[in-house]
Length: 349
Image (cartoon, rainbow, N blue to C red; front, side, top):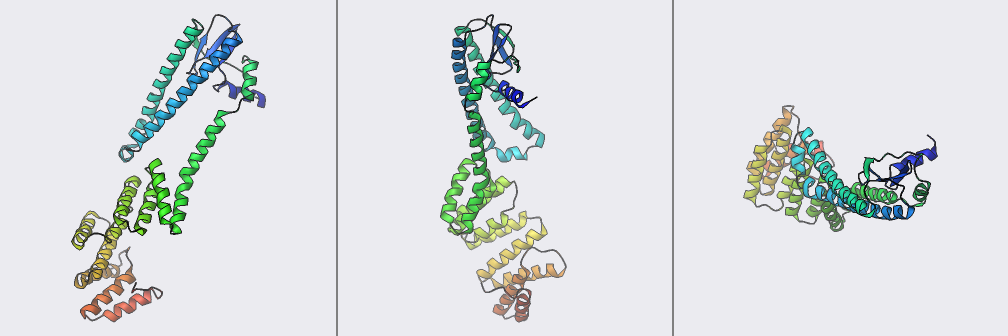
């Protein structure tokens, strides 16, 4: 197949190919491209031109309805029930996501095609329903010439899709750069807009949470970290949630939060991290005896050779400070160990 025939092949499969001549009779394309309508005679050019105008109107209506249906499907079904869908078995999820729009679109095509058939019956007359099967040898030269001269609407659609894809892909990177440069207010505005358009991206909720945290909206930051957990289908931001609650929860409520987190957590490394946070929190509230017990436990975990996720040097330093305040032996030794482990650390801060 040469390049000219290939271009004709593209024309045959486009909505610009609306008719062809078969044995001196006209076969018109249906909205459903597999359907053709064969008339007993060859229709005059004037009538075909009028039919083509109506055909384009019907296809425009169809494309508009399909676009609206897809948007409604995404915003009223996929986004609200995203987490439920992702927790279903893989096969059922794929079947659900595919079946609903396919049925919806097929029914739309049927309705629009039926309306178009009624128009042809009224405007032209009776016809025989056949398979619409043009080839590069029976296409009408004038129709093909007009196709070659007509600007491609598909170019604009492709350009729009590229813009949408770039917005989806590049906006989180732009927001991340804003936050890295401490432009938290503007970064938050951009993230809020993005999350309204695409409300299931966990990365955006993480960025919103960081921005709100730096703007001292701690409760808002926790809500966004929770949404980031929800849409990532994980508990990856649990530590950030715990750290942020420290800034606004009363002491008793925070202690209950620590206990709940320790009860839920099954991983030993993560448990150690939570205990370290709890000990630091107790130190902040001058509960030195309670904090000291936890630091002893954390350091003993390391001495047993178990893997840890908390800062060992911080545990040594804070244990030393607790011993110093409580006038217990070994304070200077612990502080010295911490400073040897991290000579550049400013433990006082």
